[in-house]
Image (tube, rainbow, N blue to C red):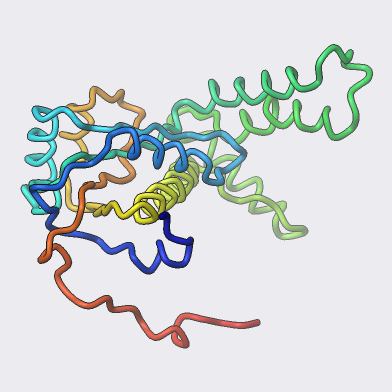
Amino acid sequence: MEKTVTEAIRYRRSVRIFDPEKELDTGKVRSCIENAVLAPTSSNLQLWEFYHITEPGTLEKMVHACLGQNAAKTAKQMVVIVARRDLWKQRAGDNREFIKKNLGDKKPSEYSRREKFALGYYSKVVPAVYVEFLGIVGWLQYFLFSIIGMFRPVYRQVRRSDMRIVAHKSAGLAAQNFMISMAAIGYDTCPMEGSDTLRIKKILGLPWGAEVTMTIGCGIRDDKGIYGERFRIHFEKVYRKI
């Protein structure tokens, strides 16, 4: 029986050692990745990819790239979540096609104001934010919007570095969906920050514009797999009611 959301959140721990005798159902892990793609994402661009690693030889290479840490050495499978800011044009086009498909046989003159805005958003607004030339365009927009922002609220995250953060934030939300889904069915995970992301890109054959957001070891916890009691800063130190 699957755990509730709260139960899954409380069950989830970063497991450092997975039980060598217990295997994972690849289909169930895939289903958890399917839950990951339902995470919210900026402008619905879904600038992410998910690499589900089950092949023993590739897993061995990944152990080396993950600095030989136990969560990699004992993992039965791995999932690498990749931010693909470079695919913005393709994904914007996918959104436009989806909108047009739902509009059916309506002529452009029959589109509602909201429908026109949605199409215009992906053909004008998104390109205006994501297009770049050596990062120069983003900085010009940043200075322009900063001036406009002196007089009214305006979107300011327009530099290339800002858009990288946006893509990684969305990918991070997907990663959490995946890990909570795994916890719900009694599977364990460990997001590993300590890794050589350049080597991981080479192992997976990723293009230059792809960036590794998170590498997650997967398995079922060993009796000694959790290194200690959970510690969190006291809630009152981080909670602010305004």
